Image (cartoon, rainbow, N blue to C red; front, side, top):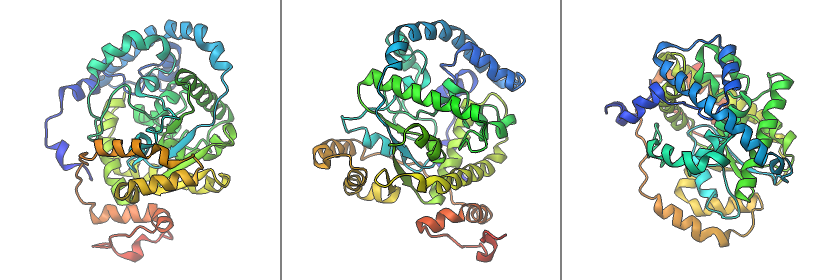
Amino acid sequence: MSKSDQPERKSIPLSTRLARGFGPGCLAGIRFGDWWKLLAANDFQVDFPYWGKACHITISSVCTTPLAWLEKYFYGPSISSTHVETPLFIIGSWRSGTTHLHNLMCQDERYSAPDLFETMYPHTFRLARIWWEPILAAMTPRKRFMDNVKMSLREPAEDEMALGILSQKSNSFSWVFPNNANRYDRHLSFEQATEADREKFKQALQFFVAKVQRAHGRPLILKSPNHTARIKLILELFPDARFLHIRRHPYDVFRSFAHMAQQVIPVWGLQRFNPALVEEMVIETYRDLYQAYFDQKDLIPEGQFHEVAYEDLTAQPLEELEKVYAGLRLGKFDEMQPRFESYLAETKGYRKNRHVEIPAETRRLVHREWDFCFDAWGYERDWTDVEPHMTESTI
């Protein structure tokens, strides 16, 4: 199985062990009623190693509920009356460079983004931040579990955690309750979901965007790999939405995605997940993500879409960012260039994870299931020890 050389040879840090056994995972800010419904939908099946985590979520949800009522009372009317400015959506598979691109784009002071604290506590971040954030910050790891990317409660973050907490309609819950993964996998593209589920998710997205924009006073740049499969749904809510897609060589994505899953699933999960199934899960998720993307991509109106390759962005970042600004009509790039240069200088020493090579049999599966991505983007395949005729999509 593909995984990082480095982290697996080191002992697991105490903070990671605590997060796996007692951390709230992606359900930190859920209300008690929603948490109870989520448990009931999964027949209250929480495996023994995660009972401490379930207790933590239960206690947290009990505390969150009255605070959520208060926050709705104080801020609900202003959120409802907020004129939402259409966000810019950064899309692309997990481990394709979406975080790097998100952090880059957020250097533009005309825009903002939800931070980690807001995505963890979407119901209560206005009232809870002043007292809970300092306590939580002391317990937050300085780097993400799966790589060397800086982590703090003030860093731009994916909105998927908030949307899952608000709607309970997120495919990320397939990592929390893997025994019922099929149920939650429908919430990747929502094409096979019920109309009620689609509406609940859209309401959660509308609410979260309005609330964060109201708090920040600026239009938002949202980043979520999951949204790569939701172009149609997003355009129903935001017809003027702009999409910035980043692609990366499928081999690199596979290696890094598999490593990420091995690190994150134990932190989020409430049921045992068989590590031997990671490769299969990664291959199926990426395939489904991009089948939906290519099916829906042509729905995006002209002038609202731009694509960048990770390899080009890292090799010549300023040139690629200038193309982004021109392609999406974001204004004068020259005015923002000094901020981009400063950020790039600060992150110049970032070290990527090192991953082992992909075995021939696994490459054969990747070629077969992801062939349409290789073809669409012109990435080369490694045929070493792989029979080319065995990878045709007609098999």
